Amino acid sequence: MPSIRSFLVLTALAAACSVASAQAQLTVVNFGGANGAAQKKAFFEPYDKSGAGKVVPVEYNGEQAKIKAMVEAKKITWDVVEVESPDVARGCDEGLFEKLDYSKIGNRADYLRAAVTECGIGIFVWSTVMAYNGDKLKDGPKNWADFWDVKKYPGKRGMRKGARYNLEFALMADGVPLADIYGTLRTKAGADRAFKKLGELKPHIQWWEAGAQPPQYLVAGDVVMSTVYNGRIDAANREGKNLKITWTGGIYDLDYWTIVKGSPNKEAAYKFIALASSADAQAEYARNIAYGPTNQKSLGKLDPKVLANLPTAPANTKDSMQFGIKFWADQGEELEKRFAAWAAQ
Image (cartoon, rainbow, N blue to C red; front, top):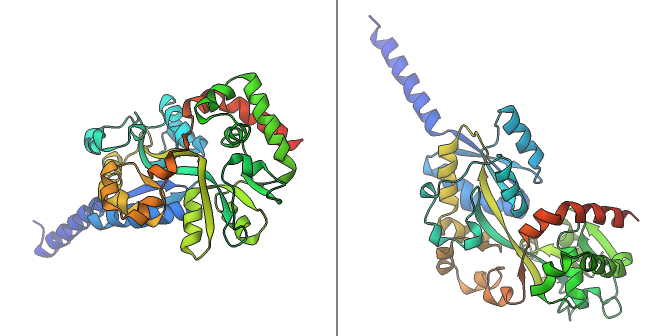
């Protein structure tokens, strides 16, 4: 018969195990930077305080190959992963992500239509736009034709090193209406036209690959204007910079939460995603970085000054377009190869 002391020890151990399991670790993967900092404040810290578990944040650069290797080896070390829009459908088709049970997340009707997909739920709406330094340029560019006008605005242009966005911007600069961009780019003549227009600007381009670079280039005066993720401009201005966005011809897109197929922490993953998709959490996220909430009930919780800086603000979306996920899923590989060869010439 066990002694009272051994009984108490066993009871204490059982209680400790129970607390440990309640505080299970959930590995959440994102792109870091200003976005990661905003997620920590709006999503990670409230989840940790809720008692559901503890978030272990990991940063990556969107490497789907890492997820694929985990799933194939059945050694899952990531649970919830932020992915860009082209990778949601592709990863879903390849069996890398769990198909979502929305009854564990929230009411589908509360979210933007584009946010609700089979394997991913939208986290936020972001936009690739043009920006300039308000301290160095008083009368900034009004459209993509201005971005291409090196006589009116002498100096280097910052552009992301890749085909995505740049080919669309080139066609806008060449006078193609927003509604016709992807129809034009889908044809050989349209792709040739985009590359030709991009070629006009090539001697004046300073390429960037990381989202933190365009604001740095603008502040340093390395470039007179740049393509940039709008949240990076917001983050720089919160640090006292005077960078300005031209929203005309911006391309908006969503990032999504996914659950890695075979995650051992699937229920905890659902609890985290449900919290991060709630109206309160999404509003708090938008207060910390100028990315638009996907939960439409968040908008009523934000003051007009915050709303005015979001890609989802009516004034900012009226002359913008949604990123062509299907187009880039169909033709992206070929166009990126062509771009790499063109950039190397």
